Every structure is written in C-alpha cells, then in structure tokens.
Length: 115
Image (cartoon, rainbow, N blue to C red; front, side):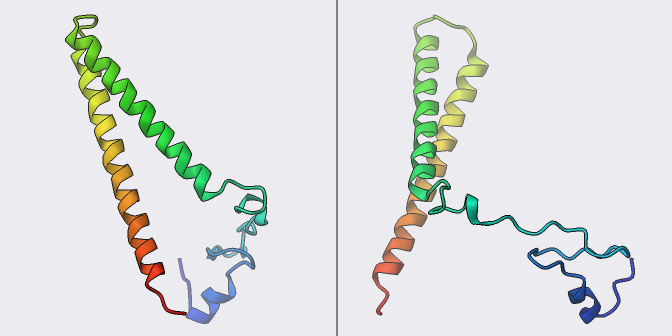
C-alpha cells in the first residue's frame, strides 16, 4: 500500500470519523453517530453503569458462595465448577476494587484542584 505523504494521508480522513481509509477508492468510513447514545441525551449514565457492574459482581459472589456451600455439604461433586465460580468471583471483586481505587484517586485529584 502506497500512502504517499502525510498531507495525502490526512486528506483521506473522512469528516466525522477518526480513522482514515487509505484505499484508492477514497474514504469508506461511516460518519460518527449523533449524540443520542451519550449520557444526558437519553443514554446510560455512569451511575447506572456502575450500579449494573456492582449488581453483576454481587451475583457472581453469591453464586460462588452457593456453589461452595453446596460442595461443602455434599450436594454436588462438581469441584471444577465450584473452583471456577470462586475464581470468577474473586477476579470480579478485584476488578471492582481497582475501579473503586481509580474513582477515589480521580475524586481526590479533582477536589485538590484550585479554580
């Protein structure tokens, strides 16, 4: 593929897109969608996304607890599913704590800004 100069490459960037199409036929990129999917315009906001994530983590932890209890009581002999469920719950909790720490770091930085 012969791109040519930087100016030629920039000239092939389709308006409303971030990715240039370097094909000889010209730009084939679709323009970016309107703001209908952005929060505040009827889209999902950060609070709803975070609540959904926490609900999913809670479900995974409850599932891991139930499978561990069932295995300990002899209701099931599926050790593989039990271990997998416990590991998934642990990873989900670890990710949740990472997100929490990033949010707290961002909050601290914002609160220390002087306007």
